[in-house]
Length: 210
Length: 210
Image (tube, rainbow over all chains, first blue to last red; front, side, top):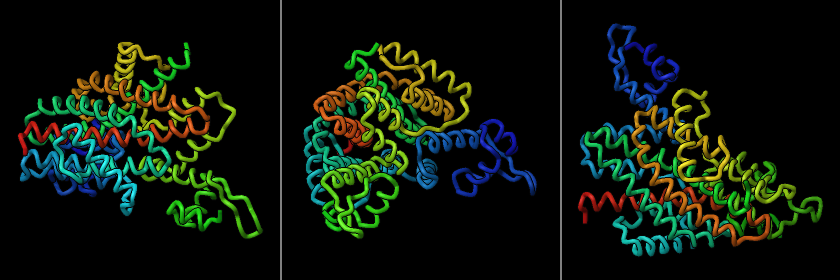
């Protein structure tokens, strides 16, 4: 199809599509004449993925470029590739110089990982993100919020097992990474919205609202 | 204390503190002489909160200003004030013109809310955020990810009930809003990190890694 049809099908303006091509997010169409490029179904699908990651996932263009590069790199073994994608999707946390709070938070993370019997590498990006969050809670004077940690960890196990069951249905390599990327990013947004709905409902009940 | 001591105690540079004052995030210190302002413990606590919301929560200065305004507005009844804070903390989603996907997603959200017996207003920001996420999943060709929705909703109920139990321990009005703001924002980050740890562990097991 021509770029105009690609734009009509996806609802993404032509200049935006050209911008994605320049930024390396979308492969260029195949030239069918010196002034005209032909786009395939695969372009349409990728555009929808880019839009989902950008608009709902809130990822930067740079982060999307990295995720898509992992989708397209057929050399990496599957487990490694999924790990790469997952690490890039860890939410950004303040990259400060580690202080006493951070050191203490790291030991708490190690204790939690051991208590749950989780098979993860010490110092992996997700563990560091958790340590940074605990350190930030403590610095903000809300270290006591840690008391929810066990309930959160148990809920996270349920969510992760639903995630893995979903991903396990997918066989093709490209689709697998895409499922992980989409499910991880949009799954965070989805869980955050559900958590707020459940909070509002619980709060309304506690205050005996109609 | 003087601004220099406030900076030393919090590790936040003096120009940054002055910027927060200009932006309305931090009340100005009380002038003790024409060139010198005095800061209190309350300034120190608020600075730590701002830093936590900014660096770990990833909130914009504008969003932090709104959250802090709700903390400081003593006129609102508690439940309403907490609702205001919660609504402002709903993660940003693409504010597009509602399309057919959005309309369908809204009916799915309404069905889920009814099935769980949640007491929430139709069209509340969290419900809209969930509908936008479902619509984005569908547009990205991953509508099938919805099959995890029930597992997520159940996990969200557990997390929300831990959240509410934590908040219920707090009595003073200012602390309450602060707990909700900090717990909501940092709770998202914390859960996202835990979800990734549990995913990595589950994935390592599934691939029989050591």
